[in-house]
Image (cartoon, rainbow, N blue to C red; front, side, top):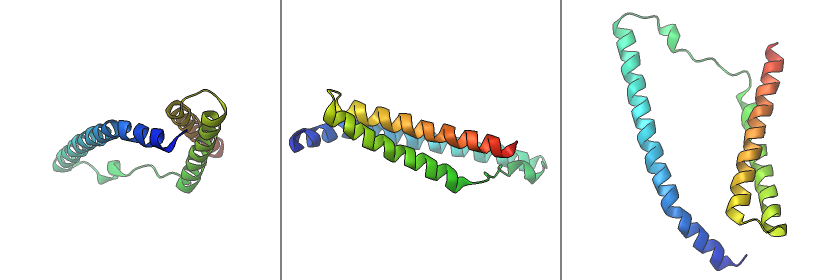
Length: 117
C-alpha cells in the first residue's frame, strides 16, 4: 500500500477518533458524577464504608499480559491479512485486534475461574 494512501486513510479516521474521545469523555464524566452522588448519599445515611471496597483481582498483571499479547498477535495477523489477501487494511487490523484481544480476556477468565475452584 502506498504511503500517501495510508496517510489519507489516517486523516479520514481523525474525525471519528476525535468524536469517540469527546463522547467517551462525556460518558466518563457523567458516570463519575453519578457514582460520587451515590456514595455521598450512602455516607450521609450512615452506610458501612466496606461496600465501596472493590474485589481485588488475584493477578492483574496476568490479565494485562494476556490481553496485550492478544492485541500484538492481532496486529501481526492483521498485517498478514492486509499484505497477502484482498482484505482492506482497516478491516484486517480492527477485526484481528478485537478478535485476539477478546480471546485474551476469555483465556484470562478461564484461568481465573479454574484458580478459584
